[in-house]
Length: 319
Image (cartoon, rainbow, N blue to C red; front, side):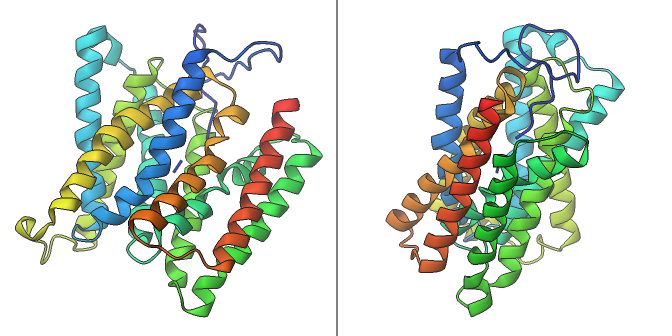
């Protein structure tokens, strides 16, 4: 799920202060490489999540995934950069924990829950509206996005209305659709918050702390929901284990880390472009592998949402 550019850019030392690159600055190959990872890998994670929850509890599986990925990433950071790279003060640690809970418990965790009843392609299309929520948050904090951004928000909301039609007609459970929408709001708040609070200077260490905090939050919610009752590890299918392993390595370690690095190194308007590439990948994979049907409300609503996001991003990149 996956939009904030609050943390310092690479090469700066001010923690929690956004430094926008000059308009004439060329985007580096590293940025495009990280974007490509987020585009393709995150687009495929919706399929992975859908397969995991076939035989695993949603929040417990998400919690285990994030904690394992966070610990592995912390170990890699300590190995490659030394333990000093993991050092943070209390404020930075608390900030990373808050962002991790918003992104991974509120954002990703709710998506995992929703995908027990919502097709992976539809979930990805609903999540594409994240940049629209970011525009709303920016306006609430006194910024003045361009007219195109406001029009993009209206298009995004119209697309959301159309996407809820499958739930209203009974083809998809409405609670699942609303859960994904709530997840997009949480993800947007978490992404936006990282630009307003002091985060760890090292983006990879920040990712590790965020994943561990978010994973612990998911585990606690899962236990609180009683997901452990009746759950037997021996009954988990081989394809669910395979999908979980894919999500740990590629969805969390590779893609989430690339996303966190982008938030430090690229403007939000460019990072946000993942929001209209991921749904295309997710819908194609869902149709090809899980035989998910592409109904007319999903096709039309998804197209409207993606058009709105394109308008927002194109407007922001010209500013």
